[in-house]
Each structure stands twice: as C-alpha cells, then as structure tokens.
Length: 283
Length: 294
Ligand SMILES: [Fe+2]
Image 1 (spheres, rainbow over the protein chains, first blue to last red):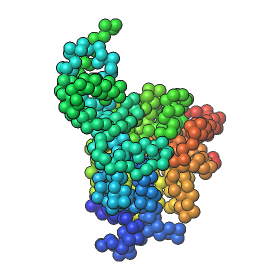
Image 2 (image 1 turned 120 degrees about the horizontal axis):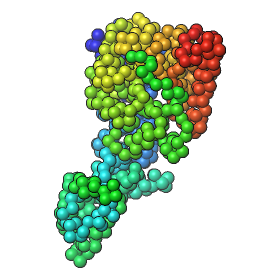
Image 3 (image 1 turned 90 degrees about the horizontal axis):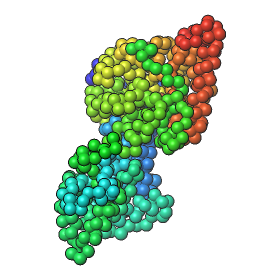
Image 4 (image 1 turned 90 degrees about the vertical axis):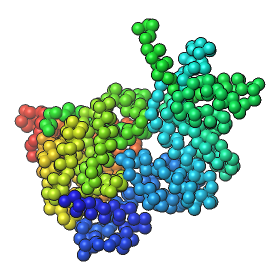
C-alpha cells in the first residue's frame, strides 16, 4: 500500500514542482502508466487531469513567492518583479521547502544568491538578503532574561571585573562587504534606495521588547560581541575592547559601549545574578 | 472519542497577524480563537508572547497545516514533539489538522492535497491518526479539505472516506462547510448528501470561509465573505449536528476585526434560530439530530 501511495504522491510532487509547468514535467516523466496522467487523475469537460494538477502547481509557486516577498521585501524591491520571480523559481528547485513551517522556506536565499548570475548585476544583494534573514531569525529567537543597567549599577564597581556576561540569543553579528543596512533602512522607510558603497562592515541585529533593530558597529565592538556568544568575565571583554583603542580614551569608550549594550538589552543576566535576586526582601 | 469530551466553545475566529494588536489592547468580546500551530513553533519572541497573552483571556484551539497525515512518508516525530510541547504550554481545547498529505520524500508543498479514497488509504491514515493521538495523549480532529482533483482509483465517496477514517481512528471531525461546498462544485457531488452522511457524534467543530469562483472551478482562498449557499449549508449542518463550535477563517484580504465579529455573530444567530426551531418542535434544545427542513 505505502509503496503505491508513495509513487502517486512522488509523481504529483514532481509535476507540481516542475519549474516550467506541469506539461513539461509530464513530458519528462518515464514510466507513466498507459493512458498518461488521465489514468491517475480524473479529468472532465471543465478541466483535464493536467489542468487540475496545474491548479496545485500554481498555488505552490505563488504561495511561496508571496512568503519570499514578505520575508525579503528589500531584496525583492532591489531586484524588481521579474528578476525576483525568476530567482525564486530557481531557488525552489535548489532548496525545496522541507520544514513544517513556511517561515523556514526562504532561509537559504542569501546562500543561493551568492552564486547566482543576478549577483553580477546586483553584487550587494546577497548581503542584503543576509541582513533581511537575520531580522527574521532574531525576531523569533529564544527569550532570555536581560541584564538591566540599574542592576549592573547596583553591583559594587570593585566586583564588575568578575561579572559574567553573555549576549542574548535574540541577536546576531553579520560581516558583510556592502553597506546594505542603508538599503534596508531606505526600503523600510519607503525612501528611494541607492547603490550602497563597497566597504567591509559589521552589522548588529538584535531584539529588545519584541522589536528588531540593526546598526553598523565597529570591528572592536563586533569582536567583543561575537566573543560574548559564550559567557565571559567583564574583565576579559574590557581587554578585548581596549586592544584597538588608544590608552587615553579606552576607559571612556568601554563604558560608553557597556551603557549602550545594556540600554539595547544585549546582555543576559547570569544565573548567579538571578539566584541572588530570588529571596526578595519584601516577600 | 466522545463528543461530550470536547467543550462547546461557541463562535470564534481565526487569530491572524493584522488583528494581534487590536485583540491584545482592546480585549474584544470573542468566544474563542483558533491559531495556526506552525506559526508559533518558534524559540521565542513576539509570536509566543502574543499567544500567551491571548490564551490568558480566551480559549484557544490549535489548528495545524503540516501534520501530513496521509503522506507515504513516516510521521515527523520532531514536529509531533513540538506540537505536544506547545499543547502542554498553551492548553488548547483541542488540536486539529487536515485529512490530506502535504509533502513526500521529506519535502513540503505547503498545500493540502487530497488522497485516493480507498480502503487501503483508510487503513493507512487511521493507523497514523491513532499513533498521533497516543503521542499527544488526546483525540484530535481531522478536517475535510477543498480539492481540485480526484483519483481514478478512488472507490469511496469523499464523505464515506472521511467517515471511515474518523471511525477507524476514533477521532473527531472538523467539518469545513465551505470546503464541502467547494469540493462539491469541483467534483460534481451533492453537498447536502455529504453533510447528511457525516456521523453526528464525531463533529466537534465547523469552519466557515469564503472562496473564489474561477469559472471552471471554485478555489478555497479564504479571502471573501462566506457566501449565501455556504450559510444555507451551515444552517442544514446546525440542524443535523446541534451544539458544535464554529469558526470563521479569513486568511487573505483580511478585513477589520469587526467584520469577523459580525460574521461570527451571524453564525450564532443561525445556530440560535435552528436550536429555537428545534426546541419549539420537540422540547429539547441541546442536541439536534432532526432531518433538515431547508
Ligand atoms: Fe478549514
């Protein structure tokens, strides 16, 4: 039973996902029963068997095209309708959806774009797609308790060096070759986007109170935030940041960055802090 | 599975993104919400915050689109685990998915495709529903889908297939009235005969939605108001099935929340009208199993 069901479902899957339509998909089929598709699917005076499978083929492509347009609205705007349509046709062949949620369907688009001919005409577009994908991933990344500035300030300064820090899961640091944050911001603000300059840069994407934001960051900050993928002592973070800073400004710059990270909700409260906070004096 | 194991939730609507803010800020009166399970299978962030806040104030039902119960592929255990974890956290009144397949060979078409209606497929699907119910430790509901093709090898009518699967799996039925109407047109069968053949004790929920007339076929687009023929079919169902929770689905061209409220209210009025008519006839008011009078 299952082998028979599998062969029918596999046939329909191939026809529905055939890049040039069900007709060409059928022409490429070997081993169709005598009588062709009509011997599997019932056609009538209104719609032939092929017309009926075509309905599913159209729904498959256009549903996913819509999802991609929503997930990659800036990439779609930069490329234009025809290019984007053709891009997604090719993408779905290379990376057909496999996950239960349609939200994962577009997760490989940036990788696909890197080797795509469209990257010759739009060399920054793979970076742009990388940034758009990061905003989606950060939007639904795991929650974590955030270390607030007030709490950090309540720790005596002499103990700061030993405070363990880690970046919240809802954040990402991207290394890109084009100034694509400007393009995404322009599209989001419904302004005209302009060709970005080719400058290696790093973008921090993060979530605070359900809102996803992004900004360019310097190499020292990027290095320190990347290292905070795992728990580090604050002293270690300071050392990393100080490496690229002149001695006379290092202390000021480090405290400015720390204040910014805390305001952005980038640092997790360590479990040690949570334990300390538990026995509330009022309760 | 007994219908009395499921609460009567009344008249609800599908929770969709354009209405999140309104629902959270204004807490509009609404009997219940249905949510698409897969939209909340994420690690954290806003989707789960919203679901938790909605669940605090309203009953919810989890409606899935990727169980792929009719696929020749093995069941996706990772998906089932996520579903179970979500149900543990949000305590839905029940869990439902579709009588269809959505992919094969590890690929997902993100669409609800019909099955050949044969005894063999009845056994295949009902065995899998039993596995899912054991895993989730609760009976589930299966929904009839809109379809655009039928298989030459089918030996059962769609309603016979639905009934046989539900009985062999001992699961509930989510009867989508619009899907009955759409498929009846597309495959030239009688929607009334379909409704009248569904076992009363298995129907736990209805879906009501709009579709698009493409001339040669009707397309289940959920982007229009519920049409008059579907309302008439719903009235017939209410007279047959009695106290069954109803839900308005609207997924595209989503109108103001107030339009959804009005649509749910119309479903309530039709229900009350049928209950009243029945109660006036024989004195009972809860379960109505009489023959349709339309
Ligand atoms: Fe439905």
